[in-house]
Length: 72
Image (cartoon, rainbow, N blue to C red; front, side):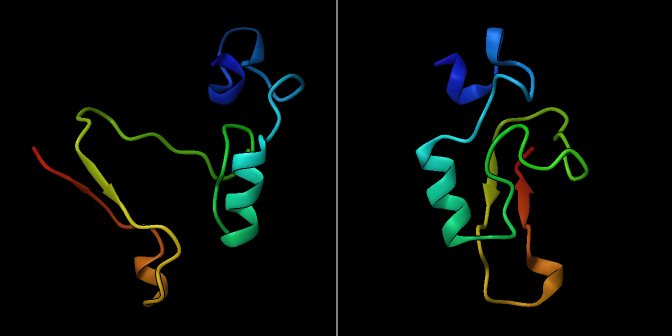
């Protein structure tokens, strides 16, 4: 649905808001980025590919807070 993906009529911060799902995720992982307009200062994109492994809320060191592995 466009409202879940912040697309179409919901493609801006005035119309796209966190869903119950993203709010629950944010509650469990407060430092996470949970929806498209969650934090405008920390957005990034991953060029190419679509085979990623993402680790949420790791217990390890700060360097492993976001671990993404791209298989070529």
